[in-house]
Image (cartoon, rainbow, N blue to C red):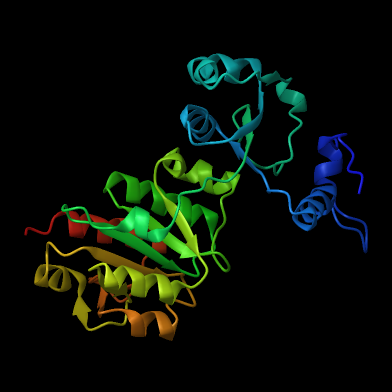
Amino acid sequence: MIVSNVRPTQKEWHMAPRKGKKPVWVVEKERTRRSGGPETVWLFGLHAVRDALMNPARERLRLVVTKNASDKLAEAIAKSGMEPEIQDPRKFNVPIDVQSVHQGAALEVKPLDWGNLSEQCAPRGERSVVLVLDRVTDPHNVGAILRSAEVFGARAVVATLRNSAPETGALAKTASGALERQPYLRVQNLVKAMKTLSDMGYRLIALDGTAEIDLQNTLDVEPNAPTALVLGAEGPGLRESTKETCDVIAKIPFQREFGSLNVSNAAAVSLYALSQTKG
C-alpha cells in the first residue's frame, strides 16, 4: 500500500465532510490503524508542548510554532534538539481542531508508555495513593484529575483502554504538563486491575454520592494503608462490578440538597482529604 507523504491543508483537515464521505483526518487515522503503525498525538498549548519537549521519555516527531511561541519555548526547544517549523499565526497548519487554543505551539508525539500496573503502583513504604476511573471519557476531566494526582503525589491514575479518555491534545492541555509526569495507565480489565491493587495491599474506596458512610470516616479507619480511590463518570457513575470489587463505598458529605460534584472536583477533594488524614 502506498501512503502519500503530502500533508493535507488546514482547510482539508477541518472541512465538513460531504454526505457519505469521511474527513481526511479520519481516513488517515484509520489507515494508520489498519497498517499496524503506531498512532500519534498532537499536543498543543505552551505548557503541554514545553513539558513534552523537556520529557526525555517522550518520542517527538514534529514541532510547529509561531515566532512568538518559539521565543517563549526557546530553552525547551534547545534541550529537545528538535528543529521547529516556524509558521505564520494566521496560517497555523496542523491537524488539530480549529477551535483549539494552541497559543502558537503544536507538537506531534507518540503516546507515552508508562509500563504496567505492578511496576508503577507497588507500595514502597510511604502512603501510596492510586486513582481508578470507571468510564470517565471527558478528556478535560481526566486532564484535571491528572493535574490533581500530581499535586497530591498519587502513584498513578488507572483507566480502561476502552470507554475512557485516550491521550489527546485536549487532555494534555488541561493537565498543564502533568501528563508528562503523572502515570496514566490504561488497562484491559478494570476489575482485574483493582484485584491486583487489592493483592498489593491497597484498600479500594469507591466514591458514590448515595453511600451512607462519609469519606473521612472511612479514611480514618486505616490512615496509613495504601489507598485506591475509585470514581465513576457523571451520569452513569460506577458499574456494579466495580462497586462489588471495592472494600467500602463512601461519599463526600454535602451541606445542601444538591450533593454531586464534577468527577475531577471529587477527585481533588478526596485526594486532599486523604492528605490531611493523620496516621
